[in-house]
Image (spheres, each protein chain N blue to C red):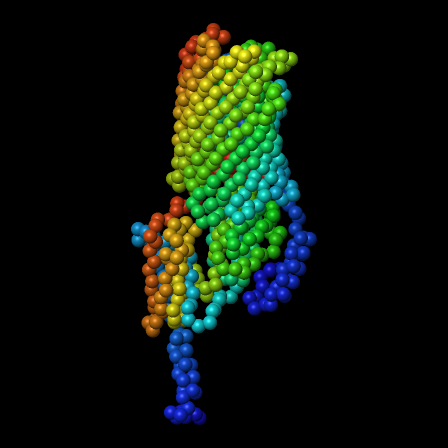
Length: 220
Length: 418
């Protein structure tokens, strides 16, 4: 059994630090609302929350799949932690030739059908734009993040996550965003309360959505 | 087996694993040299009151004339795309239209394409062989068909009749939409030969509205039927290469703008007395825009301005020509409704009036896509035109209004159609 005297300050400070850490480590709910320029909830926006206090933390790498169905990537957007892998099967009857010349990951999957290639590993954070060199209408995105907390907004434009308390940098991204990414970056501190909320409203309208229902044989 | 490496694994282990996987993959992957093919048969039920068809030596403005009001072959087509060595592909589009050409089966396009992967946002594409220059904004379906109407606009009917690139074309694209921008840009340049007769049908028959694409090295009209005696647009007479240059800008997948300047650079003084043909120096500028909306609407506007001239024995005759159209189309699921208005004229300088023509046309079409294999189309086309040649050479009327109604049923099979 230890007792602390005024002459033994270091152990006392350590004890307080542990006590404080226990308190701050208690999870809180972070809720991010993303709104379009006219105030409606924006579904499908990518939210990342990066802690500014303490040592860097990443989420565990994932193994994801991005299929190619009916001359489109399925899904056409994936958010993955750094170090994750994505498999790119082609379920179409026509061949595809996948490429990315994005700085975060340059790669090519030469002409194929089925599942001939091993998954691709994404080791660098950033936005990776994918295309098919045969079918230019095919377009998809991979957002590789270092943030331990990430996700996409629901139909109502909200994302929530259980986070530890502290300061965070919150970023928003969407494939059709016209706003500069830095304009949508916010810092906030998740404090004692169990719930912290932040609403981000775009300053510019989104670009129009890609056309659907266009016959695939129209390639001229 | 997955290449997913735990984040804490050492770099060298990861590299070794990746190398092993790459070797395994290299051994296991069939380096797919994909073959894509398509075959289709298009049968027509035709009702027409038009003057004698241009394929029979007449000056009718549409494909089928009043003697063709029966069951007709629209087109029997076979197309093959063979990929090899990853970024190369060979394309062949062969068709049977009718029994009026020199050969029953002809290739409308046949070319080799090099399509390297984009680098740093730029992509180069090179084509060599015989193919269409990038002019039309309506002939975007496979086989250079229009998904909107059976008969092409006056501009694109003329391209189908007389214009083809038999040479090499390079396109450099800036893929802005892959770099976070809202638009892409593309420049095109080509050199070609074997198109020194482009213009002869236009100066004689004027603008037509049809969907009969002259096969490469094929024939328009019939031999021994004056005045064209079966024109052959794809001839090289002067050993001088033609050229074109074009620009395309795209805003997302919504709007396409296209401009192209074409000059076959034929020497108009050249005469091949053995074959009995003259070189036609043909130049034109085409410009167009196509807008598509999420609601299923498509709007296309295209214009063409140019001239063709001959100068045998120093006697120059020049035919300036101009054409334009506006098209509106709306898709309702499997149904497509389209309407198009065409205007066109050909003038002459150096002669009294030979070859002058002017007119306009209305086209209304309905198409029903009954699954991947069947397409049923109904088209009404009315052309109102004045033609000097129709009156002077054939004893027909100067002014005519021709109406053609077609019901088409097309069945298609192919590697991508399942």
